[in-house]
Structure formats: C-alpha cells, structure tokens
Image (spheres, rainbow, N blue to C red):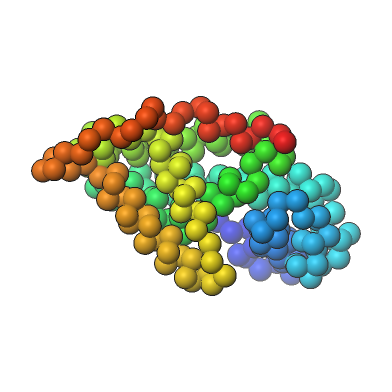
Amino acid sequence: MPDETSAPVPGRGGQARRNDALILEAAREVFLSDPKAPVAAVAEQAGVGISALYRRYPSKEDLLRRLCRDGLRRFIAEAEAAAAEPDAWRALTSFLERVVDADVHSLTVHLAGTFTPTPEMHDDSRRAGALAAGLAERAQAAGSLRRDVVPADLDLVLEGCAAIRVPDPARTRELRRRYLGLLLDGLAANDAAPRPPLPGPAPGAELNWRWQLA
C-alpha cells in the first residue's frame, strides 16, 4: 500500500506529513500498550505539540479510526497481492505470513470496541473478509486446505499470532512466524494421513461482539 509520507514535500506541507507519520507511529505504540492512554501520551511519544496532533485528529476516536482504517487497507492490499499468486496454497500462506509480519491484527485485538467504525470501514471490512474467504476457498478447491476450515478460523489464527509479543521486536517477529508455521501445518490438508474433524462448531458472526462499544 502506498505510503502517504514517502514523497518529500517542501515547506509546511512536508512538515505536516512528517508530523502525521510520527503521530501514527506513536499512536500505534501507545494504544497497543494501553488502549485507554490519553492523546497527550501520543503527542509526547511523537515529540509533537498537542495542538499539532489535534489539528490532524480532533479526537481520540478519529486517531483510533485512522489506525484501524490503515490496518484494514493493509490487509486488503496483502490479500489482493496474494490473489495473483498462481499456487493456491502459497497464495494463502504468503498472505497470512505478510499480515502477521505487518501486525495488523494487534489493532483488532486491542482497539475493537473503543471507537465507532465509519460506514467506509464497514465496507473495507466486508471487502477484506471476501478476499480472505476467496483465498481460503481457492486453497480448499485445490485440495491443500482442510475442508472443515472456515474463513473465521483464519481470523483467529492471525489474532493468536498477534497475541505473541516480547520486548524485542525482531524476536517477536521470529516467534510469530514460528507459531504460524505450526498452525499452518494444522490447516493443511493431508490425504495420506486424514485428521479427525475439528472439535466444536466453526466460529462465525459471534466474533463481531468485540466491535460493540464498551
């Protein structure tokens, strides 16, 4: 997904972009650590004045929405890129690997229910779900993904990987990739050694409970 701050812009416009990048990076770090943290903590972490932050994001909800919107769009971009992969299993696994590396689902785990999503975000969410479901269905049609796996299972796999966090970011990435590898072994179809059916009903719309405002 294109980075809004990638092209240098002179003058005040360039400074505004740099401030925005600092604010978003700081907000992600602050709110993933403590979703109840005040906006002032983000300004302090970013090294910008509180007035500069409020000019860009008039409320904490606006900032949270922007973080989650960007996460959704990264998810969509990775799913669309994976769809071009000719091998169905590689398309699915590379998509999951890139989403885990991007840490998209940490936002869902930590920030769901802390703000009101916009209609645009609901549209993006439906688009993201449809793309992920398409990758799963394609892998099942190719015989590489277990037949009893549903798209919501992939959400829980991603959330489980996002829950892994240690102080060292590089080690966090290694551990997440390690356990994603273990989970992918469980998702893969194995005609040579058929597995028993997965226990319990598959997850569904019940996962949406977290988006209800606290």
